[in-house]
Length: 316
Length: 307
Image (cartoon, rainbow over all chains, first blue to last red; front, side, top):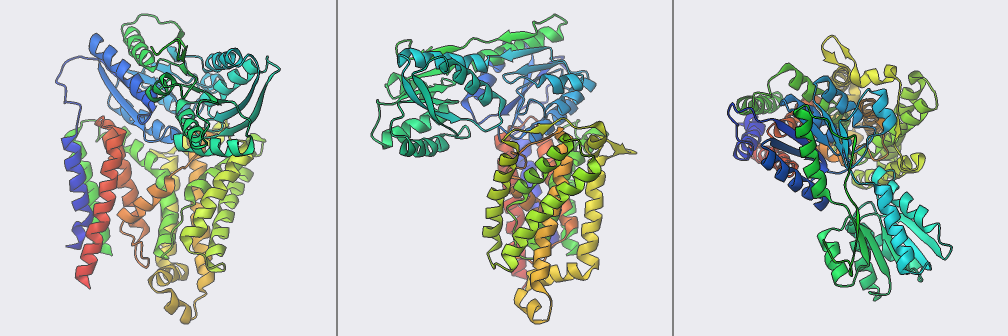
């Protein structure tokens, strides 16, 4: 009796497996398969990207396989996903690297399997890629550094060059966050009336954005502007501002233009957010993959536009 | 115990059979080699966790120790030290953390949950401070052999895993240390009264766990060609899961590393199969959660029947 312990559990898992097999065992049709490996699927940014990719895949008649790790920073899991997907005979691989250097080891396997690689959103580390002999067919994304600058210039404009800024950083050492912050700092450095009085990581998370900004406000009563490297952290800061009864007196600028952020901007609780267009990125990724598979050439960089979403500019 | 391990093995084989039917990509040599490689890191961490859990403890700090030993290793390699020095240093870094855990539990009489929870935060923070939050990357081909090389057809990480398990199995079943680990987990008070140096052995158990985390860190660093201060986050839960699926009782005194290896393989095969089938990561979490809970549920129910 005792020996059936785990088999029972496994049998259950198998039932779950077979019920949820969402890819029908597509017959013998010769539809090409494009794999899109995302950092995670629990962030609206990547959910939008997936939607754009799906639209393009349906329109162009290719099969799209989307996989992602549970956590955005889990590059080992992302590597495993790439290895496993290569086993299923995918024709092209579009990937948003969880680690600019680390993922190169997995891409070496894609190259060995003759699967063309397209990089989306986060660039590969040029040196690591060159050392491993990896050349991506194209990079599709928007420039996070430029986005940060856009936010910085906007802050200078709306504060007439006088502001005391609190910055909420992403996960330390994360390429995306670093570029955004560098762009922002470079932009505001031009203006002598602007000082960054505090800069702390809130690790991309809403609840940490709340706590970290609450602490920041305790230490620096006179902060009048917040720049958050992502909207989730900005939204957390907005709650902290509300809790301190200071709604409307502190300008919050975020990044990503999430739906919640757009709503907050429309309600006047938030000043602005830098919009990237993940839907366009996903679409461009699949379109480019299809071109590559047809033997056509694609440009080495496909830049997706950035835009400042403000109350007056309205949402897109 | 033997029958129990046999049961876990049947579970693994059933799972493989199901995947073999569901997808043609599962039962290929290259895929199976992928699975064992992907499993190796969790399996190595779980081997140490098995010692701790058999002694009726828990170690929540393993993931952070993976990160800490990894960055020590990465920094030394980057500073131009040969692997022959950097690897022992990383092992020492892991054992050091484990020793502190062990002393806090045995001498400090802290509950293992608290002591290792503290270490989980401290080691993670130390890794971040040490590297200023940035990954350390780019190592020599020679060092990377630990992840990319192979002996015959056996990939190097699998070889490391097999050696670790052979030693761990021997230590648990054939040495007095192993016997005392079971005894402490079964009834600590009785073990102490019969003259066993309980404190010493309990400390050693956490040191073993720290050591295993460091070994895993070495393989992981070579695999990613990078030592990340954020590596191994939540891997304590994967290690506990593999141990528990493998039949080790959280109450202590019972379990085996062989079972843990099979438990780790079940998790690896599940994840691989779900990837091959194109099932979303959200669903993967549900399936793995269900497997863990049902395995333990059936286990405890049967235990109640037996006594």
